[in-house]
Image (tube, rainbow, N blue to C red; front, side, top):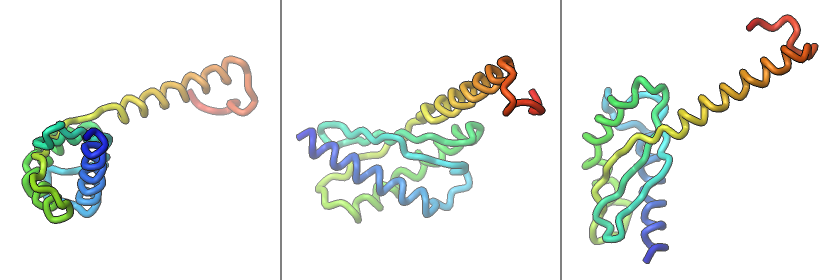
Length: 128
């Protein structure tokens, strides 16, 4: 049963990602939106779509727009999936990509400061 749930989650992820890349014609949905994960209940009644939105200032407004578009997305899923019952879609923000970007930026800054402190000739002439 778990394999079927995972397959359905994968199909939902691809379909929602595809719909987002084509655009939903909602002014609230802005920025770079990535579907990071989809979890589906065992009874297939509800699917939680975790999305990352960059830049972060668009996140809440985009989430609101996605919630509003959920019935349309569900209807699109119904056309592409052969299930008796299409799960309801719930959207949640996933800030893991934002945290990863901040970590990568901090790591890069730490490496530059280490090179600069060690007198690395590659960093000579670089600003702070």
